[in-house]
Image 1: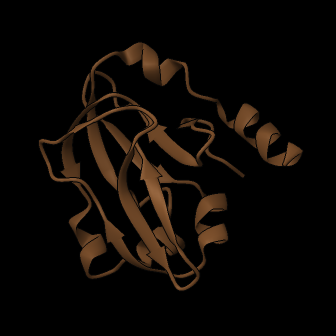
Image 2: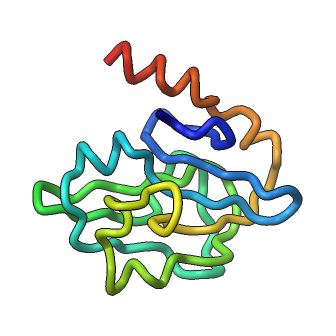
Length: 127
């Protein structure tokens, strides 16, 4: 159910490493489903520094507003501009067109330390 080529955080973000370049970040299918219909996405500015575990944006749904947490330390290199007009992409395609931002990671080992799909699924099964 969760793509094997991604890494996951306890806060339900996913990270896709792309070799030596920036990592792509989004929220998991579990998170988008729990949030409900997303109507607004606030993302950090390109060039801003983010710290792992710190809030760096917000996802507003018809039910609530939830913080987006940075999964790693680094610098934001891109944000998904499409979400300004189509925030529902996060619901309809959370692992594709609904991506949120790209981060140039300070230390690649941070990505390696995140959960794999099996561990993430195990965490969901326990809750």
